[in-house]
Length: 354
Ligand code: NAD
Ligand code: DAU
Image 1 (spheres, rainbow, N blue to C red):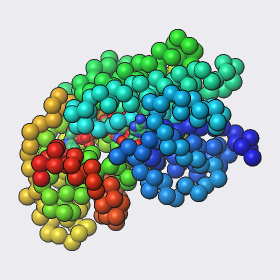
Image 2: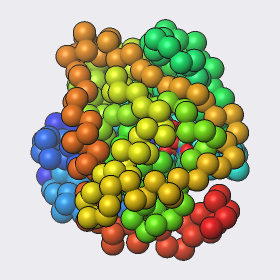
Image 3: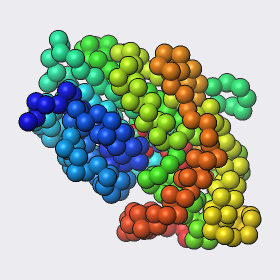
Image 4: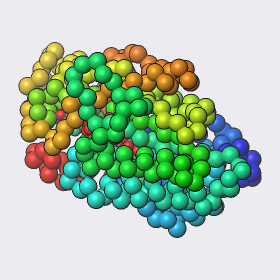
């Protein structure tokens, strides 16, 4: 039965935001691959994100911690894992400022455990791939202007989160150069779309606008992010996994830069319209608060290499995608209520004090 599968792919962090979109895409597009989703189900992981694929015959879920070497090794052996798409991480910059050690543990040591399991169980002659999913934040911050991050940009992380992701990227490349492990990496810009945990800007603000709660804009709201629809990212991961060159890094981005305050105004307009409120009624919720420590001014990705080598391009309908995203959160209040109970309330109180 098990030998019917052409590949046995371990996806880590598959119950999180981006991971759930990657799992859904791989499970449905490739019924001849077995997809093993390994996730610890931290506050950010939620099996409800995968309700539509959980019964598929080529899908398995394993609740485990990537920091547990014995368990990781057991999963590699039991499922005869031949490829890894590694997304599991602590991913929220603000949390990394209050708890840097857990970021080092998961993002650095967890990645090393996976690399070790791959190195120890994979035979050199057979085809394998360790795909490490990373972030544009490793490149640091750009000034306003034309410059974009390319694959050659020097690493310059500023937050404990980006420092931990940078360290994990270095370890992945070191395993390639030292042990010949077949690896590929991608560094992506800010994602948005359904199933994102509402501690990140877009779902947090949609939820707050709906409930007439203050919108805590850091600093003057002038920081710039390059927004990419999450399904575009999943599509890029699929392409790079199948056709990316071993040992290479690919930048993934939206060519879609927005100043935070401008994006927030688009969200306000969209939520107000969809809820039948007066245009701009919720502008009064904008509240400028103390800036994030070490807040990177601008991220912007040049994804020309991915376009030239693999033909990937971001979808360009930003306004439609944002509207679709707003609608999704408005239509899924139950999902939001489930993930914002308990610990989330304590986190929110500590972060924003209301
Ligand atoms: P997320 O926080 O929504 O999900 C992370 C998932 O990892 C959760 O399901 C969580 O339960 C799991 N996890 C955490 N610690 C674990 C552990 N020790 N063992 C096993 N599972 C664990 O994150 P996301 O936004 O979906 O990001 C996924 C990946 O993509 C991360 O590596 C992140 O650095 C990267 N990334 C994110 C973005 C973005 O905009 N969100 C952009 C570029 C890159
Ligand atoms: O660039 C890719 C990265 O994007 C990923 O690697 C991270 O995992 C992901 O969390 C994201 O990091 P950011 O820090 O850019 O995302 P966040 O949604 O936390 O914040 C987006 C911008 O909005 C940032 O400039 C900070 C600002 N912000 C955020 C929050 C949560 C606010 O002004 N107020 C807020 O309450």
